[in-house]
Amino acid sequence: MKKFMIGLLFIILLSTTLSANAETVVLKSNDYDKPLDSCYKYRDIVVKTNNGIQFWWTGTEFIKGSNLDSKLKKSDNLVEWSDMNLSYEVRRKIRHQYKTNIKHYGDKYIVYDEVYFNPSFIIDKMERTHGPIIKPIYTFDENFNLVNEFQLDKPLTDFEYVDGVYYAETQEYTKLGPQEYESKNTIYYSYDAIDWQIDNEMSNMPQSNGSNTLVFQGKLTNYITLSDYRFEVKDMFIEKNKSDLIKVVQERPITCYYKAKGDIYVETQYDNSNTFRISRDGVYSVDVAIPADSDDEHIIICDLWKDKLVLWTNERLIEYDMADIEDVLNEKCPSDTPYIEFNGNILGFDVPPIIEDGSTLVPMRFLFEQMGADVEWDSETQTATATIENKAVTFSIDNVNARINNKPAKMDVPARLVNGKTMVPLRFLSENMGYDVDWDADSRTAIIR
Picture 1 (cartoon, one colour):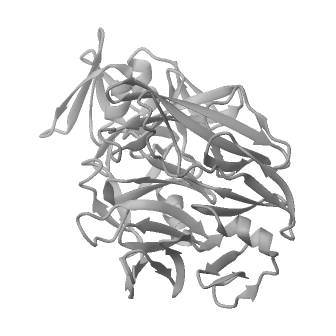
Picture 2 (cartoon, rainbow, N blue to C red):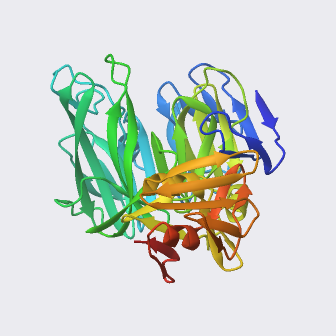
């Protein structure tokens, strides 16, 4: 049964799952229950059965199939459908895979099989596998004429199209200890999806939303039995060019699934069904509430279907308007929000910095943690004292008067309390803690040295 879960748009809640001070917004959403245990329906269209996904958004149109009919149909609006005049051989290549993906990248259609992770019975090695057959990457032209098959020696684990370049990834893990594994990724690239080469410099797949290109380093965690495993993101970098990466250090570490969806990034967590995160740049993010359904619900997949963001859980599909997501990002993470660089890393604050009267205010605790400063907080007077080596700075909320080593000083703007976070003037605090602060106007970055 389809039901509509209408939330109050942009109501602010207090998250109890990721951080005591994490702000969570509620967006209106549509909720689609599973009619059968192995079947998902979306707007009265069967999008998945136990025989695999029968429904795709390629980036330019919707395509659907039926278990009773090998023909495929396409649509721009999910209402009017037309038959696709495809040969039996093309339909077979599309349909006869474990988890088919159809993407329209550049001037090509790419069809590939994405596999889940199954541990090998060889103790010291693991790789993502499903059955003995490794399917090729099929490349079709605009009219779905086959132009290339590229056969990998290991199952495909990811496929991306970034800045006009096609990327494919295979992956294996070597066992180092009882629950410790080292990953090895092989990255293939192509400028035309026909001639493929191995990139000997890259070890991880880039992802781009047209703004920032991100590179991730992952790890296998929570490996206990042959069926209990999880992949998590260990480190994240912004790619300035292929040989220049800058690490993003998040106040709340990112985990699990993190993908570019249109012009945003979406992070979901397998074991947290209460929220997911959206980000414009991979640095600053907003938590979005997921309508409560049951205690054991968890997110499996996140898809972008035209102008809708759709979360798959083990119990239903949840749909959000991308327009609403853009609105909340514009409100909470404006495009002119400055970046803070410290020790060569970009700091991903839980609450983004704000500008007041020309001064940049940033969350106090995470900044001082990165500096190695000790912080004492007096809740009665709302006064904080930060100490590092032989320097101590004392300041109060909404008060421009401060003390440096117990001597009076004055700030251009006072510290503020925003969403439970103490926001402090960056330049005043940093320079009085022994650092210099430079401003890079081109990248809107305050660099603490």
